[in-house]
Image 1 (cartoon, rainbow, N blue to C red):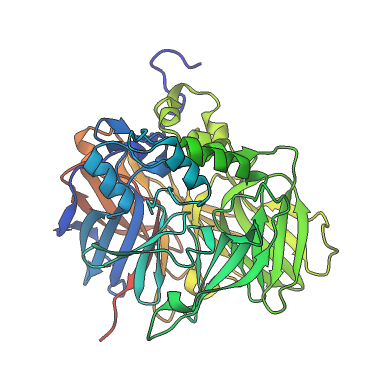
Image 2: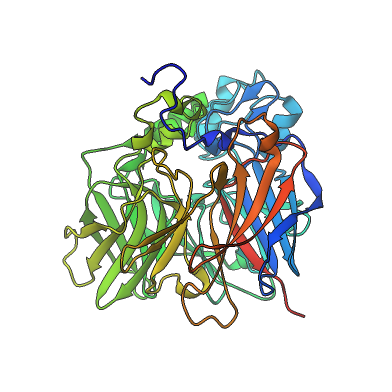
Length: 512
């Protein structure tokens, strides 16, 4: 226990995750630009994340539960504007009409509805996912020329990328897919792949779903399952927040963090938080599932026990398959994202270890026998999360650099933007006291010849108390991707506190 009034982590303030947006920004705010935005950076950076932790007098208990809030930074001829708007999910609308939490979220139990009898809840057990939240507050991705917000349930919401209006709600493959990851892969030809859990032959299977690109028509009409893999433990499918794709393979990581189907069914009945269905098995190894995209052959390999959210990249080279990911020793990082944990972090001596992520590389000889033990080595000894690469050109291919946000709360520069050279292990940091930058999105310079020739765009907010005046300040940061030197920033002051976002996507300006 820390001494009274003394902070254990004086250089880090995670209260940026606990803010509530009380007023949307419908009409674009003009930013005050310092420095110079490169003339070739033209387009829209969309961001998604938890925008409100309150409903009436109720409060969500976990960062993953906040109502989805879309942010829009539009860059045109060196000028930058900002907007934000809540996604009009069924959950958001019903919660706000009732002024209480009606839907169970990842870490929050819903308030009991007196109109729902025990028989209603029993009926929901036989329709898996029937009463789950549709709060798509994690990520935003394009499917063709349409933009959708995602989380880990099968529902997605189409968003107008200019006004941020919610246009429609969709459930692609709703009759088959129960959940899917918040991080699909958008291929260079426009096809989209995602990993889900589907009902098949009376049980649940991991499935890869393909959404073929089409210039005319609906990508969802032609969506179909291209690969099916049985979980290694039938009643405990592994939790997967992302997956990998290479030229010839899909890559799934079966970590020892698993979804207990027994608990899930019980929770459907009693409306317990989804997180209570997740079980960590410290005595279980991690398995890497490699699916051949050409013939469907599935092989499993073993590596050390680890937990992960995000795969950085995966690729094949010289007869080997490489998988880079941000790893944890266990699943306590989920505990660290509860509201009470964040509020008490400055007196919790274990909080830093809960967040201790490290980027690692798994190396698999493709001719190795199935279930061989494979190497998992450190790429750099620095905490890193929400990784990004030069995605358009290097996703699924050999690459060298990735970028992310620091997560080591107990160091001097606790919230930096990080660049890591996977070849040398060299790291570079951008840091400014009092600011908390978000996911750095790489934008390549036109006709760039080098992998890191471009800029990073990062939306950042002030580190301060949620109800202070500084909580209304946010900025779009523009960094040179090679050196992490600041090129420009556009500063804004919003009507209400500015919540920090999770993930985003850049839409380049269409050339006339």
